[in-house]
Image (tube, rainbow, N blue to C red; front, side, top):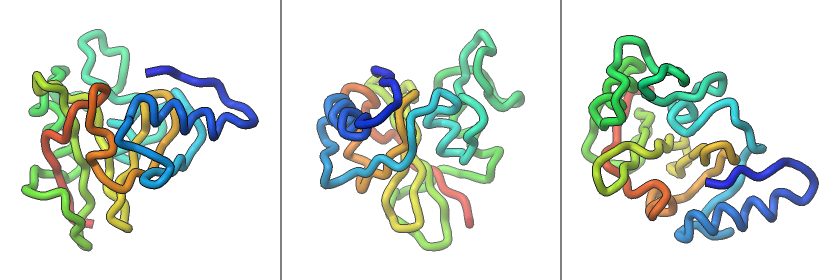
Length: 157
C-alpha cells in the first residue's frame, strides 16, 4: 500500500488513495479519523496500542506478545488477542456489552488486517502507514489488499 506524505490538502488526496485500494469504500461509508503515522499498524490499533507496530515476523523487528508464536497464522493472532481477554465469537453484529475485533485473511488464510468495532456499531481500522478510518461495514475493506473477514473475536467491556 502506498504511503502518502502529510500536508495541506492531503485529506482529499488520501481519500482518493484509500478508495483506490479499497473500492468498496466511498465518501458515503467511511471517514478518515486521524493523520497518517508509521508508529502503529492495524493489529496494534485493534488492540488499542498506538505505541508499537504489531506483527509476528520471525526477525523480531516488530512487537509481538512474547508468549505467542511468531507465525502469520490465525491461531497466533487469536492467541495474541486472547492475552487481552478476547475469544472467538460467532457474529460481527454489535453487542452492547462486548468489544469486538474482526481479523481479515487472504485466500490462503494468512492474516492481513484487523478492525475494531466502535460503540456506534461501525468499525475502525488503521490502513498500514496511512490514516485511521471509521468504516461502516466490514465488507468495505474486502478485496485484494486484505482479503475477507476470517473470524471475529470479542471480550466483555
